[in-house]
Length: 118
Length: 109
Image 1: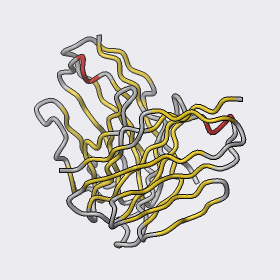
Image 2: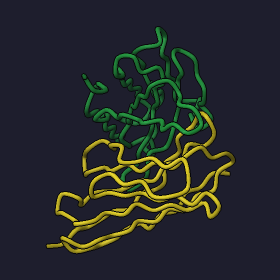
Image 3: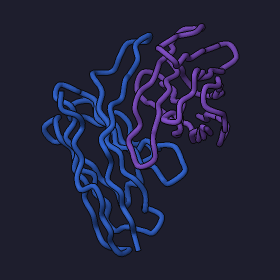
Image 4: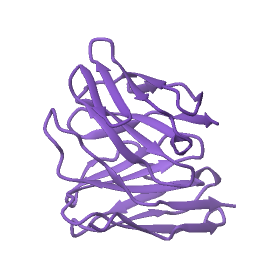
C-alpha cells in the first residue's frame, strides 16, 4: 500500500512570501490531517478533514493559513504571508474514517515538508 | 483545556527497560496512543489503549488508567535503534487527536 505523499520536502522562503504544500493520503482514507511540528515540540493539529469537509480548524491561523480538500482526496495547505515563526515541519497524515469509541484512529504520516522562513 | 505532560528526556542503557509516562487532561477522552519519531522522520504508530490495562506488542507495552488520567509506554530489551522521540496522543472526543510535546529517549551502549 502506498503511503502518504507530500511535496515539496523542503522549502526556503523569505518572510511575507507565500508557500503551498501538497498532500495525497492513503487511498480510501477518509480523514486527513495537517499538523505543524516546530523543532523539539510535538505535532500541533492545524486542520482536520473528513472527506472534503472540515471537522476541526480551531488552531489554524486563518488570517494567513488556508487549506482545502476539494474532491475529498488530496489536499493543499497554503501560507500567505509567511512569518519567521512559521518555520517548522508540516506533516500530513491520514486515517480511515473516524473510529468508534473503542477504536484507534491510527494516523499514518507522510515524510513532511520542512519550511524555513528567512 | 487540553494538556498532555510527559518527561522531556529519558536515558537508558542497551538491554534495559524504560518507562515513559504521560498524564493528560482533556475535555473528552476516547483513548491514548503512542507514536515513535526518529530524527528527520515521520511519527509512526506504536500502540493504542481505550480501556484500562496493559497492551503488549512485542518489546513494547502500553498501559492506561482512565481514573488517574495516566498512561505509560514500556520499552523492554532496549536497542540502539530505539533512540527516538516518543509522543503520547489522546483522542479528544470523537474527532481530534492531540499530541504531547514528546519524550526524547537516548539509548547508550
